[in-house]
Length: 322
Ligand SMILES: Nc1ncnc2c1ncn2[C@@H]1O[C@H](COP(=O)(O)OP(=O)(O)OP(=O)(O)O)[C@@H](O)[C@H]1O
Image 1 (cartoon, rainbow, N blue to C red):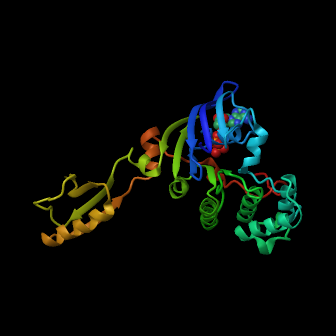
Image 2: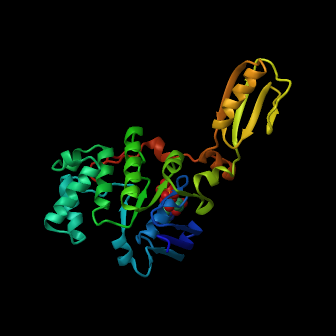
Image 3: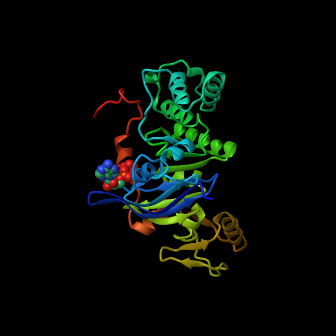
């Protein structure tokens, strides 16, 4: 059984088709990244999967339960971290988790120990009794992650988990995500418009654009859509005997090699230069990334208005209006 099975999902807002016949599945214990630009339909999809929104048509089965027919059962098996903080900023870190734990029926020492364990996991134990209002954006996000784990969900949904965070905090969050998967074999569904986030974390990626999935697979499978590694070499003199296959001489005198694996090929190019008494003036190589895949499929880059605006992660009530 798949952890998540989505079939022909459609969501219309009046005439706007936000999710357009989307189908995909996520295996148990997999990190699945739903990658796409702003307005692609990522949040709408995650809201349907987490029972917050009803689909216009199609089905979403989560841990074996239909999201529209059995929402309560679905909610018991999932944890969610939304794009915007839903913490109570007047309460302490501990109190936020305590209330959430109570809602899920935990109590007494079991709940207290669970809270300590989770605060420790996200490195916030020393801030346990501090008021959330004074937390940084990264601390808020970490506390949200801890809260989402309190009832030991089978599947964790993260809507843009690192949006608006600085690079160091972002990589911290990536570490937690990987640890959660490794420790609990948790299924993690995340939306993101960060290519590197999807590349680094995801076992499987689906790229969504204008409400439609335009590509799906492992990162390596998707990169194959673009092609192989590309090495560009400028020798001091144009070599007379180019001994490699899959290489071409460009008008600017550079030799371009296409290869499955540049890491293995580059040392061979140096050997070739040495054996033929050639000097290398310049060498560079480019591995295709998910951005290249998106460009190839859509003709444009994934860009985010939110990045430009540096959306705030401050808890509700503390957020300033710009
Ligand atoms: N409640 C709503 N009412 C009307 N239109 C909506 C609503 N929610 C989303 N949309 C529209 O549906 C489309 C998909 O939006 P969605 O928020 O799912 O995209 P997204 O990929 O999550 O983008 P973002 O990263 O900006 O949240 C957009 O055109 C959006 O304007």
